[in-house]
Image (cartoon, rainbow, N blue to C red):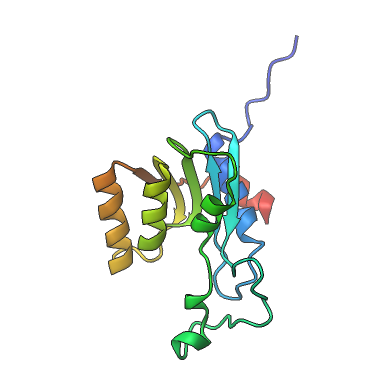
Length: 161
């Protein structure tokens, strides 16, 4: 009888890989962010990536970060976390986990809390220390949402890319 292989990837590696892969669907030329929502028993419930709402053409709305508010992407784009929450059609997300390739902004933090998601696993925290980031962490702490940074092993990103 042979033994099982020992070099299989962990749940965190698996779901962060799915999150990163989801982000690769984004058409944003500057920032591609993915999210993967997972049940307590490690079943994928939903995925999302940053982009424009259904029916809003990727060719007609601006992708730039600069300029007047109506001439840049910020009023129009939906973040990956909110997309993943809105894409879920199965009922409650109570006690779920969300894997995100970028730590959630304050608006997504509110949606995560309201959806009942209890754990956030993030890859990059490149906006650490900004007001939005501080507000997210403050709200997560108040609401009892756990969050921790994904510890890269180098195995998954290698495979995905």
